[in-house]
Image 1 (cartoon, rainbow over the protein chains, first blue to last red):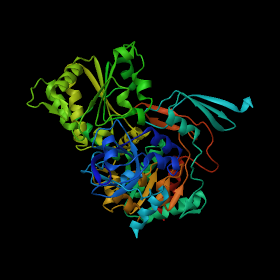
Image 2 (image 1 turned 30 degrees about the vertical axis):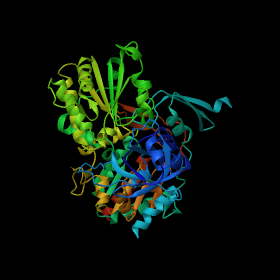
Image 3 (image 1 turned 45 degrees about the vertical axis):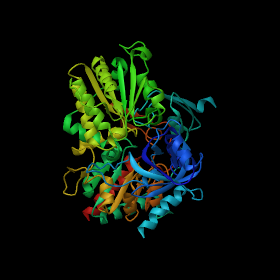
Length: 134
Length: 432
């Protein structure tokens, strides 16, 4: 089966690759490759009919982002993971429950296979915020 | 060539809150060429310290002198009504002190990245206290180490090999005599390194913590499972935790950033307090940036409060949710941002970043980051622990001296000196 979308609980956090790329530089290709990915379990990959490196769109009530799919066979079905960084934050609400801390973990999200979508470069991602300014 | 080769011994690594101070750094011709003992990220930090650098001070993308950049910074600050000073976790203690001094002078709000990592830990500790320990004590004494909502293999790569899987005074064979457990919502590299992995349902940390508390106190529960963990397994865990000679809870952002925030930490603190009725248990947050622990500690020493400090009335006030950076930006309250050693454009929610794009931003950082692209003024700084000295605080509160290994790029000075220049120039402008 392919197409359609899957509902997931989306979480974020650190990865070794993200840490290394961050130290190298936040505007490098390495950093983009480390953070513009979404790890999905086997069932979700099969359901969407996608393979490693395919572009997918993640949608939450606060926004959407396009990233590369990455298979993680150890993930529990229904859980997806995006490394902490600018692509994940497009999906994030700013409500902090009066603590200062947004809810970085366990967002309800839908994931769709979008083979024709392109992943924004870090420069374009930054520029997209500037468009909001106008 | 040998006279131009120098090896610096026992250098603290300024990446994560472990502040591993056993790194040997080899320098040739003023360049770092090799490090030993460091993790993969540490290697990138030292060997790649000259990559992606912010090359010179700039205003609206135009190269200017440092003095001209400072003049523009002072203009922005002097004309702002609600300045937010933010960041500070990837710089050293003296720079943090200068930031608080500037905040007082400018009647600004000063917040550090604690507010988006272990801020809830501090709120929890303010409610319930916290039984702490040093990492050395963990190595020497602990026979049960419990990680909760943390993935040290990715975020603190040497935490387990350096502080936990090492023999200590009372633990001769750490593999046999010390057990490592992990509670998390997903399998990670860390879950494959530990002796026992307990997977819980996302968002049920508080439920599981409270269940453990009840079981440790001897209550019987009318439930077959909590958070997808069977009561029998939780009972077995509770018994083992009570039977440990010395237990340690290391908790990460899986506890502080998830539903419940500081209430999760509050419950974890009370769990440890309950366990101390039977045996010895301590707890420690897995602090991320190398000196985020220092940022909240220096803020507390100087202002009386750990983060989210408002000097609008001339004296410090503390209110998370009001004076925290994400809230101030998302509400559209801040009218200028001075960012030091952090990257809010890369790490804040969309609404907060959108407002940040509407106000003048001053960015002080050694490297180009996403906030650099949004900043009106960019000022490069020396990297503490590599290009200038200083002090930083390890995740257990131990202050360590950071060494200068190589010279910074020409004309680049430490954060503390840049902030002092801004403070002194602003003071002169305000006296006119």
